Length: 198
Length: 260
Image (cartoon, rainbow over all chains, first blue to last red; front, side):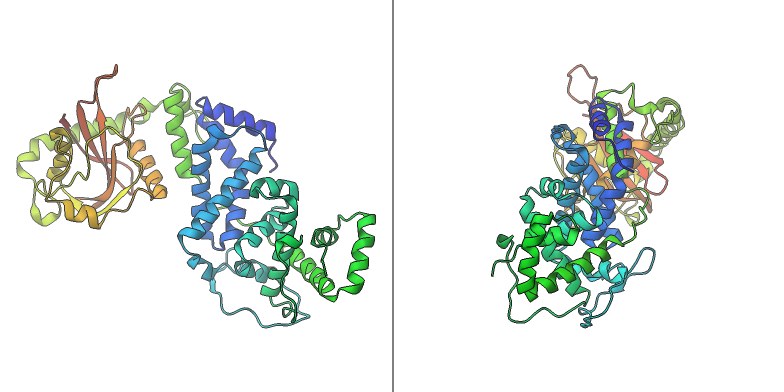
């Protein structure tokens, strides 16, 4: 469901004026996106649900600071990403060792990176699990770009970094993900370019 | 060699201009590494974009919604209680909580009558060991205290009386308060506990507990919420009330109060 930014702004104003149902509507509009970000960034449903819960509590308490300069969905994504980072810091990424294999299936232990098969076609299950092996900053950018399908300028607003940095993180993240999926061995004799090369 | 990552991203995304495409093609013709990385990036992007949308669990924002309703009651008490989560009108608060209020009044009477006979040491915390854990300042609780403690009626009364006495803490119960209390950062449990307590207690009128404890009461998992109340009109609080609410049913199981 795509929410109308102007409607979201109105809902924020209504909530601040004392209409609790307005916040309920905001939650109903955005919780699927927030949970999706948290699930793909954090890696398991239980922690993703916790991060989503914290994101909405944080959003609720900061709604008075929402000025409407950016769309509410942009602002809410930023809150969600911060909630993910908080949870990852708090739990020292231990839960990342238990990764969902697919929707509704039991979790499995993540073993060592998959063996290299240059011609192997990756399954979606592998992509979800391999995301855990992508560095945090790259993973967050990847999720926003390729899971949430957000434009780079919006991701730039969410992460508060230049668009060029976003694109660099997405590119490096995609390569890291492909390698984590076991698509190919890292080329020898060349180090990874830094973001500055973007 | 300088690798045009920005343009390579556009190439992978299929959003590159024809002018930039010529630049990228020239670079790729002489850079095997970038050719390989572009191929990898396309595979990764396609894999991520084919991930199924996850099923969204229910209750993802329950704590925030409970807090929103409390805020709304404070800001506009005539609006919030009449709206359900789906926008459907609900029964007025006084009607929904009338039964609970009657039960609480009856229990309070039982507590007063039974007080001389309660305080069995073998059941758990007694009046002598009940810990109030802090000053009785009228500051809203911001965290849930989790105690591995079994309160009885006398211990609950001691909790209220301690606020009444003004000293705020008894030495006898300090050991479990320090060892078994989770810091205030446990906001997730706090929100759930608060929603449970607020759903049970009638006529709160936006007031918040100064202390919220998760423990047991006569062996039953329960929340103990301490509220301070007063005559209003800017006058200081003159009564401390401890509500005991069952965790599984969110129903009032006991209450007691003390004058400050």
